[in-house]
Image (cartoon, rainbow, N blue to C red):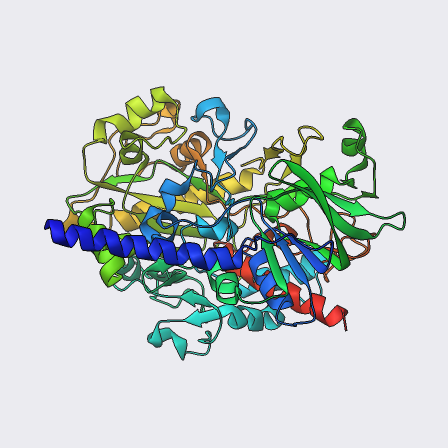
Length: 595
């Protein structure tokens, strides 16, 4: 690149950064906030951004949105850079407690849990996959938990309300909408191996489908929340476009530490800290918690809403005895499904050339976040079209990530034996995700100090059925990866065995035993980062529920939770699309109740 071209690129980048700074300065109000608002919303994430936008559509509603993180960055808008956002100020950097039934091959039998701390929440750092889940998931919320009104026939319209489908081949098939705020697009260009995975799956009997269409068992290139080559978080879709609204105030870098109540058990406001100064703000109508599966539950507990004994142990005055923090669960994923190949993958490093393509043309490797998905139904499911395992090809591995300086948490002795011999080889991973885990864990406070991160225990594989199901999915991943359709790319599995699993290996590297896959899952456990459930929704009579089907915290007035924490059970997919739907539906519930 010539000096003149480089100068032009730098000037363009500078102008874009300044423009975004101006946009966010309009969005994040600098003036002193008022003492009272109609609605005070905690958390500007996947759901909170939606709720704030929809409530402020009515000009007479005064809305205050409080977010612990800051604005998104130029790097966070680049779809290719999702992994680089972990362990940064945009990530809460949570760590789970040592596990009893999993994580044997990880340091301290633990792992990090990425959660977004920014305007947009986790939608500002995730991989942007747009998958709604299975209609049976939502019907099951009604049948199993008494969450009346949340069946598929009811929630489908709220998915449509949010969606701006960009793919003309899908837009008119009856399962999508084109007028919503949130862009959903198909990658225009994908690596040959990513596309070949879909072909191989199809050859083995998986129909190529719209993964959000009429059926769920099948395969396809995954759609993403990407608009013209740039990530579109919930904040970008719902807040930045409404920065001119005078009735919507947003405070970033603001940590809410307590919900305030009067003596009638009514939520009347919140206490928060900004710039080291403790302040309070009050809600005329409602306080709405949208701080996510961890933040909403932690805030309720700090405020005296939770299990009686746990609060008593921490000397927190009890407002309501509710099972807050119970029902925590996550979709486990497994490291170690690795294959060597003679193919090559797109280099997504930030270079002068890739920056030029990104900023000038809105194209190139920085706009790509490739992922091909195959949805598999295990032998343990006896209903039609309710797959329970998600398989996806990822053009990298822990080996390549570790050599580039990104910590995986895998123990050194295991990495040295299993991964190290292949660090300089071209390879790919198969992400194997258990979509509907039976295991349940918990969230508890470490102390009554809001700055202390809570104790998070997903209790992976506590239910042995989870282990058997994910092992079957791993076996299916091998079947696809080593199928004749992949042969032109010289696909071969690792010829090393995970230490500790030697006695479970049958000696056949092309077709390892289920015993070995179960051992591998227990050893190299990972997370799909789809945590839900800590403020479970259910019928009023359900003693395991925290909120009712109107999302009201039981036994308390003027307080709701609207985010992924209310899911009784996780959807059979990535969770972002469903959480946006919860924001849309929840906002309408609030608006209707205020009439």
